[in-house]
Image (cartoon, rainbow, N blue to C red; front, side, top):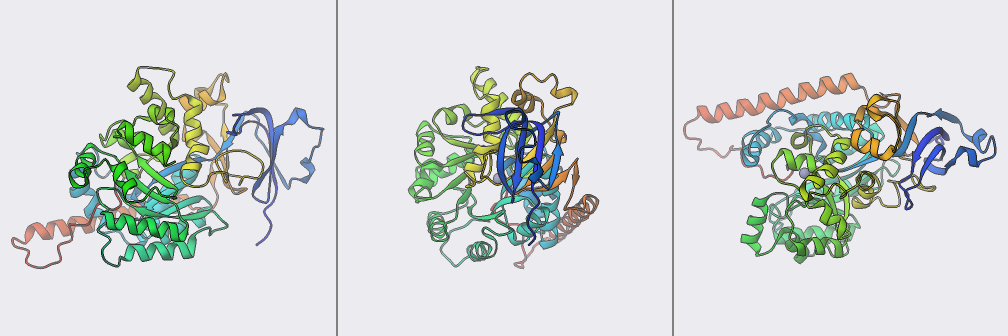
Length: 469
Ligand SMILES: [Zn+2]
């Protein structure tokens, strides 16, 4: 492999997201061998300082440079279902609309859906995402081609009492992809949720994660129904149930949603250093509720931000999630000073990186870290005047403001041109694959309705909710 060209970005306001929250005006960022080599203010340096060393210079005056956004919870391939079934109660949405389509997914549709989501994420400044779905080998291949970074989990549900193909798939995925694609891809173990995973499965998956030294990605306490189900089955809250089954013992756990939590749950999440992914857009659209984010932050819980899957979220827009995260808590608590712009930007960058197990690796512009950075055009009406760059970005920023996206020191979008993917082809293929799924699911439904007494066992409508939600 040829060495990566070094890159100097200059003239920008650099929002480092380091521990001191340094914001550097007229900043210079030098990237060498895919990593941040140095960052500082141009006026503090002798003229010509190391600049001659850079193979390439990007002039970025009028722009902000910040760490790439981390979408800490997603089901990328579900982009094919976007807009297909909205405005329905959760169980009807799943049972009548999403699961019949999900049952028709094949490798081609997984690739098409993932590529569509990856394209959208890159265009909005997301450089890393955590994904849970199936056929993750295909998802990994798309991520590799696009040049993004991802933590991939095969979603798993069931009793855990028999040998499961999904567990084997997780092993194979880890063997093939963990730290693959130049270190851009990592693998996680993916128990879907407390209500879909019985105790034996949770224990097996916790053991698997410990054995393979992988993080865990799961959904927790998303809806009131889940709270009721887990209380009836196990006499516990979802958080207590997971803790009881050993999921928090020595494992890095990414817990998506955490909407309905007791005070004791919050304490457990903080004490056991469980990373929470706040997904305000999805929680609103599916009427799950509003997570107690202010309380979580106050308790010292590590929090990242996620969109959730495109079918439940709509757009994979991290800017919208930032805004919702801040504004909802203000309305919820009646205090305009809770959950600040800086706190949500941290959640969308270094916080998310920590939550998905990439802490110290990405999420901040600090020498030594991988160079996952985005250049955002600030010279736009909705971001003017330049009082406070973080406030402007969080309360008024938009995916289209992102101009250039760099992952591991390599540009993957420049001046809004996505470099490794064919946009037109991705859109056309996604539309064709989505139409194929709808056609197949509709034909199956029609056949079922046309047969008065289905005696056979080809009944396909009981696919478990292992990925959705
Ligand atoms: Zn989800």
